[in-house]
Length: 158
Image (tube, rainbow, N blue to C red):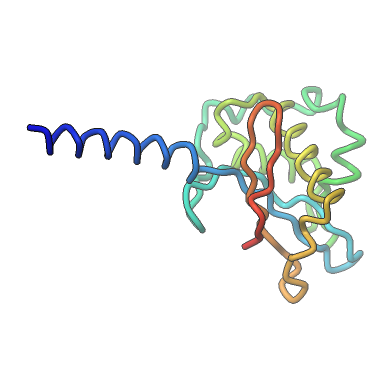
């Protein structure tokens, strides 16, 4: 009986640890081939290395509307633009990013998702956290632990 209780407590503590420590959010940035600048490529939850959901909530697809992000349009155009070689407009790029990744960030509205992503990108840039990006592939994924009031880089890129 005591062994079972101890084992149950152990599993409970392990579950709490996993929920609190394993899940994080990835900011992916990419260097455009034609202009050499970094742009945001995506922002999504990651539950373990190289395992992330996409296209999560089709009922939220219709929530994307350019008027929702008008207050941060300048920031989006400055930091989260479609690379010229992708041959798509920023609008369609942002719409795809919302549908593919933003709908997986269940706690965020459209404006919150884009605003949080931009703030995370600026935090990474200002702290040179993307200095570890692979210049050969022109891309890197930067894991963060994000709480309502804090963005914490996990100390590595992958």
